[in-house]
Length: 98
Image 1 (tube, rainbow, N blue to C red):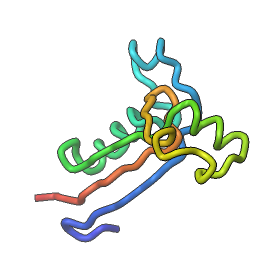
Image 2: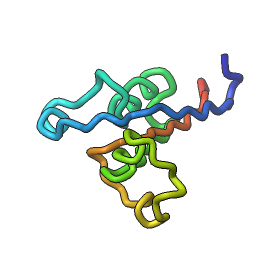
Image 3: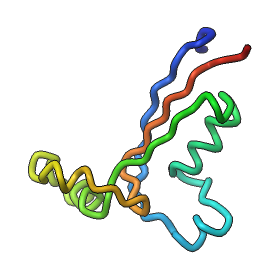
Image 4: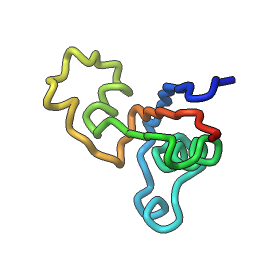
């Protein structure tokens, strides 16, 4: 679908607390996590052709679940990172078959 050197910009919702026990021991690939997206997109585009980043923290996750608008939280609260609460995961993938 992508032309040579085409770029796919993708975002997926995480919003499920990570099981740290499972994640650290054998990985968490069966739901939308940064690790799962790294594996899925890496298999198609190649590890060197992707960038995966998770955003979120417990407060932003609670806000999402409670229907609290982002404007009701401070920028500082939103920018705190807690990889156990991945609210949004972004992927940049470049098609490079050379």
